[in-house]
Picture 1 (cartoon, one colour):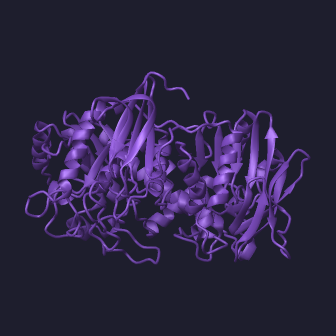
Picture 2: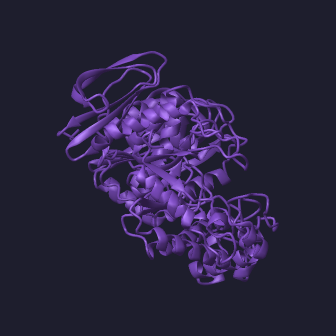
Picture 3: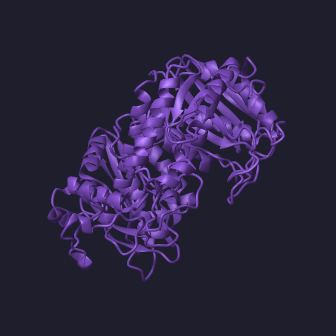
Length: 636
């Protein structure tokens, strides 16, 4: 590890049996030896709490600590992530373990952080958890009559007479959308409570310098990451590369999502060391491509990158997983590339330290909206993430840094805010967006926005619900599309796909930007996109899912209307640029992902942190990387 220029390792996240081989009998000495040995070689440690894998002795003696599936069957097929995090008994076991770990290592100079659990990915539906859900609902609504009113349970004869009649559900089934959403909220808050038990146990003894995180999974949506992330010191997530090619846009968006959870830099807790060993794709990237992927992590705001895994195990669920060191203890071929990355991190670390991505464009994202669209797609091909990406992709291609943030965030620093598919919109969020627009911001709604309120019920106004008066227009009706329809107007000719909303201006100062051209259809000649100036701000609603070329022209129009210029300088096709900013400098990470060597001409003289050379241009081989520092001026 030292030869590979590594400076951090994670340990113990699946080691409960080694730490407590029998109930109440602990052995932490081996872990202390490992931590201190790492420290002697310049390697700091993140201690993983072992709670994602309860030991066999515990599961055998106390089966209530295991997950019960939604069908009522207790799940025993996994070797990890099969614990019932709602179980009070299991939480007590976790608290006792974490306090012992924290008391032993909370002042160890080599321990820099703690990772709680591992990839939260299961929810129990046992009777005790169901009872917790009933209590949660009663606390939220007060009376069963208020719940029935909020969910409109009279429809389809779903009226409840008591809270204990209401099941915690996973997925849609033949249930009420209010129940779907509140089940997800309960799961999210329960996970936060479980995590808080461990945070409090660690903080009982650990020094404040030791940061607490967990490892999330990008777009994964069992729970609301904004809820679960708020108590963590820093966001951590896992970003494996297993499909054989690196897509900087597809891979970049979840980085921006994770950075937006707390609006700060984050840690990548796992990225792939060679192919993955499970049943999913496990194609290794080209030689040199992993280096570009990891530098892209840094470009999006990662301050730490850790690999899974160091050495192959002889057996177990990930025995076929790639590693830096193979079963014989000798390095795998990828070791050389990771060693190069380690040297480069040492070289460029001081230039990057204290910098962060800085954006003037935000895309709004909410888990309730994503869940609701995916529960009721209205077109099998409709996907909430793809909808967001249809805006994200041209923004990235045009050279903009993008924050992905929730609709209740302070948006005043952004010149342009885009909300694709913000289907569930609370009154407080609507008020926040109104303040943004009236304060001079430029707001763009994509289709399927502001249909539902906080209870997942339809707003009594047509879309965009409580913002209809601000827009001066409304969605007259919507329809799924079997075939694309033509659309034309200020953004040229385009095609509308998957879903279409017919708009109707209601105020005289609303401008129609695009119209459907669909003979014999209800859509023919009707507005597909409208905009309204509001003071120095504006509010635009796009009711169509444009094709790629049409969406790029639409985004270019938004950027012009917002008086925005690209964050990054022009580069040849296939070259990526990421910008991180501090008060006294900008750092540009430039990568060549094309199939030929490229020369990048810089707008001014910069210092290459990897070569210590002052340069006005850089020549990059295929998968080449440059880390360029521009001092002083950080204004646009």
